[in-house]
Amino acid sequence: MMADGLFERFPVDEIFGAHNIPGMPVGRIATRSGGIMASEDNFVIRVKGRGGHAARPHMGVDPLVVAAEIVLALQTVVSRSVDPSQPAVISCTEFITDGIRNAIPTNVTIKGDTRSYAPEVQALLERRMREVCQGICSAHGASVEFEYTHEFAPTVNWPQCVSVVVAAASAVVRADQVEADVTPMMISEDFGAFLRVVPGAFVFIGNGANDEPGGVPLHNARYDFNDQVLPIGARYFAEVARIRLP
Image (cartoon, rainbow, N blue to C red; front, side, top):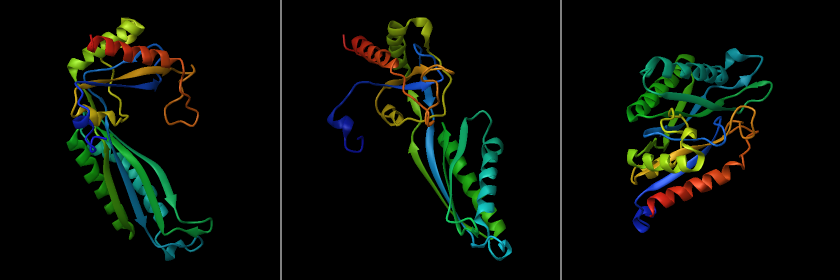
């Protein structure tokens, strides 16, 4: 939308967004000044070995073993290469092979994503992950293709807009149910791209905690949007509009 000239065709003074958050009780709204959500980068690692019969592994190069070693080694990048004061996460989320029960595969694909806040951390993660993959594959006689792409920018709230959302949220759910300095989360949101060019702020709306309805985490197969938060969200946005459009 931005590449299509969204804000040039439809100029706006400020922009506000929200997301339901499992783990936070219904009736709570949280936000903060500055970074509230991380960037997201995606990666694809393609390991190529030499497949063969499962009974004769010495005749091939097993990419499963190589890829498994890569997955484990990537867990050390954050703990041993990133400054502990800098937030960062590496998650391998897919492991795909072209093998079958009695055959060692030739190809293994690892997919996943990384989260961080600082451009220098993004660059460090990409560099160290590439080095780890190349080093392990070289040691085992396999080859590797490493692909790393930047998907979402960090979501950084504008301080002057945070005061607006805190006032609006306080009018809707009471001041004692509003957290104005919530701990930043490593989740990502494309709303961050908007906030790079337009002042605004993003909030979390409690979806339910623990065993309450709506408490199952996002991206879980059992996740269920809690319909109880719909009136809260609608009233919140109406209050923002009332405050900013007198």
